[in-house]
Length: 189
Ligand code: GRF
Image (tube, rainbow, N blue to C red; front, side, top):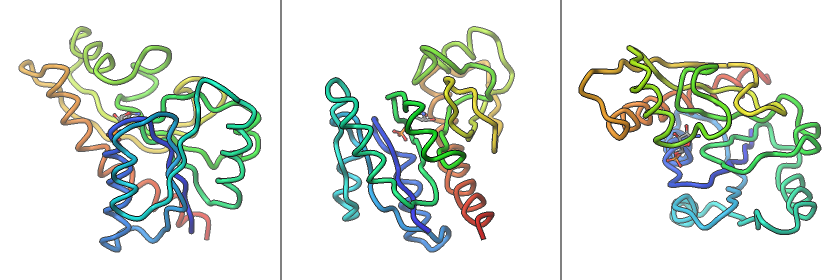
């Protein structure tokens, strides 16, 4: 089975998929990486000889959409791993139920507009939550609103800072994402 990964950041979740494939834990091929800006994920693609495409997120939205659709043609799963651009409905309609995203909280808590990066963990700590975690969900036309597929819990300690919590949650993400991709690809058979 083939997947496409979309990223905008450091790409550590992208790396977790590469590692799972290279170790044999995940039977899949990454057709390509799509990024919407210059970002750390690109170096990981280069290092592992995975094709990558940089889309211009400011201009030519129609062209971007066509490029994404062509790159994703006939793949089994499209994985958003820290992708910050919104996928238009026209794209989602072409790939119904095949687009998933990983989010660093226990959705539906701490999702939606402005909830990304350290802001999520800052909000969790400010609210005095005892636990947080990460979620893999299907992407629908809302922001972080699609069906929850898998979640993993992380305990919040009174000593946690947004940075320490981000690290703990990210470690869990790196397990949850490849595991969930594996399960979803298995379900195709
Ligand atoms: C992760 O926390 C992910 O949940 C969120 O963006 C971050 C991406 O990190 N959507 P990385 O680029 O995979 O390191």
